[in-house]
Image 1 (cartoon, rainbow, N blue to C red):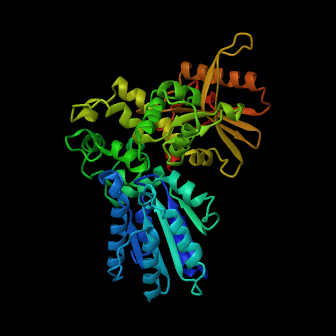
Image 2: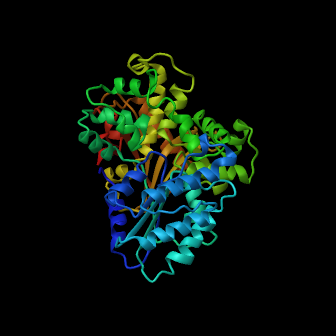
Image 3: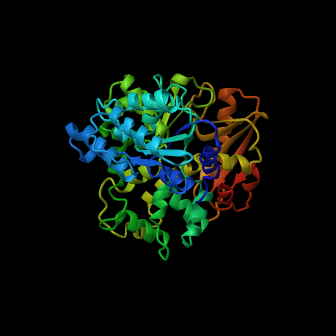
Length: 479
């Protein structure tokens, strides 16, 4: 298994605990939650079950279908009964009997895609509460390990992790599984004998993000462009339909979520809630707040407050690499099956690459801090912008990554994607000076301000090189 060292240790330690354990594992779709759990327990469970996706089941049949699937899983785990399951209370009663009959020292119960099982009016959560509070914790034998998992992170947060009902504070552990880092993607490719340069790995990350499943589809013996064409642009490509499946699997009514995503795709930088309402025609309400929070919990967008601003001026920004790529290149049904090979160095690709590389950097802030030698320094990671204002002497600036440090230094990070060693020029130098001057004038900060260049290759040394205080290279992003 690549990475996941701490997560695997946390799961395996459950076997040594003296009390029964209830753990929630969550994270975006395709991130490897199920694989992690199965590997951690060597595929040995007293009972395991995966909820059914409701998209292909008629609404009035969903609860019945979920219960029938649960009954089948009970049977596959060795539980024999002719009892028909009419409710989730019935289902968990049978699970109790199965646990009571088991000779396993620790009864490991793994329920995957729990959110899919929670159909309208199902009372699933109430039955799960009763199972845990009224039976598992009341057993003299403290031998149950209950692991629940779902890709619908927002559902897990509302109903399990931050439950205000019977499951409030009942979890003994939780794991939010994050996408792979660049270093983990590199290690994964090595196990598959796929030979990519680090530049090509960064390019792949700009498209696939750190989602292990997407990386598993890459093939050895193919170049980077060939792999991308086969994954996205060839007829019947593996990931052509992933976009719709991704949002349908997470949200019962995905249309408005997709509208929000498309609004964010249309603006490279973050936008306000009011701007989202204008672009989507979705009213500003508690329902919009819920949808934005759900998208944030699922890892598709980020919410941040610019440096020096109030929380009411928070901005929302698309952060999911695959979603950005889809909306730029696949949404309009590109017909060229060799599109990526044929579009090298095109204006469209170059414009996208700059934005996508910024996303990669935002997902590797820990590596950037490490390269700057401040991994142990408390920081606020932020952004900042100001409009031009002649009265205040402001020229107007946008800083996408601002690292405000406890040691009274601010790193103004400029992220530059390049096809070779980056060459700082007069335009770069002037832009960096303008941003620093605007930041000093507008915020009146007393901190030292360091110009910081983050780029995917190295940096050519010239007359402008010496004006840069700190440089972070592509290799640094892998450390």
